[in-house]
Every structure is written in structure tokens, then in C-alpha cells.
Image 1 (tube, rainbow, N blue to C red):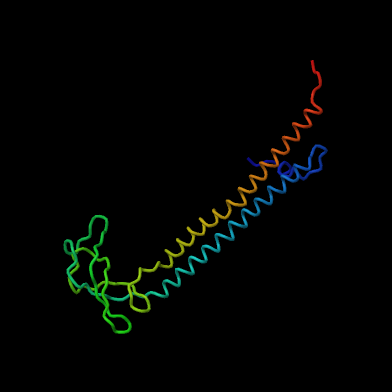
Image 2: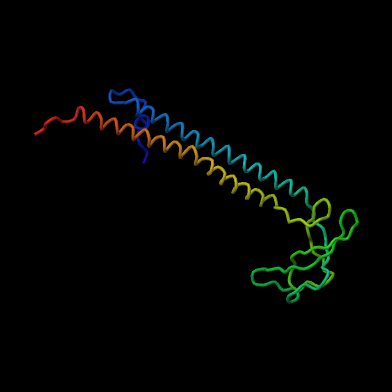
Length: 188
């Protein structure tokens, strides 16, 4: 598995059999790997930082409030289904400007009229989705950062592989040309 380090650097050693194409391939390989690592790292960190910043802004823009169920929620009283399901029902709350607001939210089945429910609202008292917790935000940012890093790293990696394949085809065609010129003549 671990080879002698001299074998890793064979393209740069002085050797009468070393061709210019070997050195070019070596540098293309090094450049492709460096660009792959750099592009992946930069894209991953930037995407993760952007996601965390956006989720932190979302957390800062929303706040929990207590709302009250307007009418008895459908389903058996206080029981959750086997999957922890919830049902939609209408609730009422007071916005920061003092206006009464109503909206549809999910509650436990059978919630009684007047039962308190925690909802999330924006600065104007409109319903909003529950924001991601700091832990959830970190997990989402890491996941999206990993996806972005992988997507960004594929481009230089694929370009390097394609360039190496092209260099190899060129080298093989030159070998064919030299072999046809210098190959065995009339070996019998």
C-alpha cells in the first residue's frame, strides 16, 4: 500500500527515459488535486457559513407566542397517533400591535377549545415556521456545505482526469508513430 517515496516522485527524477510528457502529466495531476481540494474547501465553508447565517437571522426574526385553540380539534382527546401525528385547527393570538389574529396550526388531536398552543410569529405577528435550533442549523449547514464542497470539487477533478486522458492518448499516438518508424524491420 505504501510505496517507496522515490516511486511517487518518479516523474521529476533525472532519468534518461523520462519524457517531457511524464513531467507535464505529473504537474497536471498535482494541479488538479490542489484545485480540487481548494475548490471543495472554499465552496463547502462558504455554503455552510451562509446557511448558518441565514438560519440565525431566521431565529432572530421569529419569536414564540401563546395562541389559544378556537374550536375543539378533531380526533380523540389528548391522544397522539402511533407516529406522533398532529391535526390542523384554528387558533387565535394577539399580535404585538394588539390586533387579534387567527390562523391554522397543527396541534395534538382532540385539543379542547381555549387550550394554549405555542406558535411562532414574525415581527408583525404573522404566523411563521418554527426556526431551526442552533444544533439543527449546524447539522443543516454541515450537510449543505458537504454537498457544495463535493459539487465544487467534481469540476477540477473531472477536468484534470479529462486532461490526463487526453495527454495519454497523445503520448500513445506518438508511441505508435515512433514504433511504425523504428519498430522491427523484417524480423524473421
